[in-house]
Length: 248
Image (cartoon, rainbow, N blue to C red; front, side, top):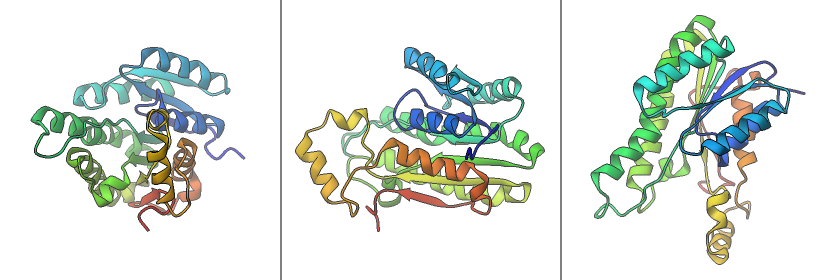
């Protein structure tokens, strides 16, 4: 059963990791996929072909969602190319970790802009389209760090906590127009980045999780499929933790 058949979806930051898994999973469920990448041009071009091979319409856009005008142009191009936009997944994000005493203004600003401001930019740009449709699902990627904080990640935690407040406010503002707004908070997800870490350290993290394993990118993608589909038609303003019970 294809839960997203014919739905036009935009996924930001989809050239690798969680974003790529979301794009591929959505395509498997019949969604047409627009996606963005910034620095990973070759990976972006390869993903476009991989998605098209699944029999859906797919197009990659090299775009910086943290740039207000670029985000507006992106949404206009996607709506023009695809005819509508049913699902927006704000996944683009970066980390620039450091202790508060050592963090500089540039590293604070860049994380807030890429992680938090990009959500404002794309959601603001897509609002008119979704209001005309009287339908739409907005999915913003936050983190368990946004719920509990983390030493050495004041900038990242602030950006991800901000996404939660933003998501809930959008749900309140746009619910009457049939637009839903939810967030997903991944916990310890095993990606290309974690493969480079010391195995003993990674195993100690797994042992501290009630389900005794790290999450996969597919675990996050499955939650996104649920929130994008009509199965969650009465769910808005929520944060779904995909964390194996880490914050229980």
